[in-house]
Image (tube, rainbow, N blue to C red; front, side, top):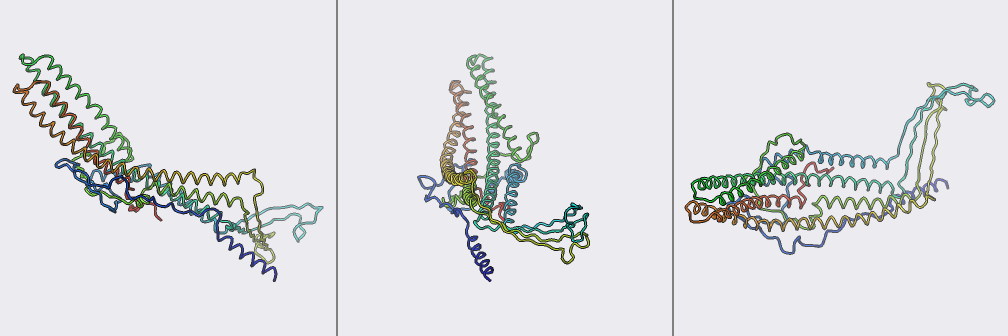
Length: 490
């Protein structure tokens, strides 16, 4: 009776101890106590009429971001290109595989809470020493032994080692999930940026070729005038030099266009030797007029890099508990049951069975200070992860603030570029007419041509910047990954 009471008390105490886990319990970091991203309130951007990409944009507080945000540009080629990249890009596939690895490791760790059972069967032929008493009760010196056996072992999670390890694997799975989300957002944004840049380069190439045609026409006119004595050799040479300078700007643009093609091919999981079916032009893109303005408290939930840093902090917290638990006693319970018979047909006969129950406690005594320093290292790693999390949050807010400022300033830059291009075009047309009728000199025409060239290229670049800024904003605010059905949720 006393033995039963002792076992009851011991089992109760074991259950009470097992209800807690050593080490710190992770607490989610509090959201930053800030109300905005910039020193001034968000304002609507300037608009430019009759210019692609010149639409005014306004920030809408609480506007959600769709998982396929690129469709807001209303470009079917862009939609097709990004969707193809999401199915064929190897980096995204690798991130998806890493998520599967983390999920399976988590499920495997859950098995540590259950007893382990193994079955075995052994057959042996034996001979005992004749001077000794024969081992079988049949007094045989030669015998066969058939032994089927089941072994069960269980390690009670007394100090929470298994629970902290499971917590670690859960945090690592979250890390993999948000790494996938970050890869997804980065990929879609990079494809959009590359497509916009390609459209910009095509427009710049077209503008440069038009300028080459204008300068070629002026060279031909001056050659005719020089042949008839109406223009000097100096004026002709200056125009030929101007034409050569314009032509020299074309090869770098063509090189960049080829590189953009290679980049888009790689992002979509292809090789650069093929032709992309999609062709992009700035005029085919429509600038979204309403932009999301997520609250700062929402940003840390939406940004996958912040969530990944949080998961890394959680993993570091669990590592402290694991390090502490490794310094405490470890209890193991085992049980064996089976049968031993001299003939196969008698393996499960009466009297052949055997069983054994055992329990053992192992506690660290001396490991040269290794366990102590591992615990200290785990605590230092937590501090490191906490500072990395803070740095990630600060970078996230900086990223959004930079993008908001870029949207405002680049909208103003587009308006200025459009005004400059219109003025340069009027100046060039008037100067060309006056040149043909003899009311101005050639130097004025060269200046007008140069101003127009710079204005056209600047306008195209300003248009591309507005599309690119908008894509970057969607990326900076999290890219809507939480709406994707393949976001890694269980």
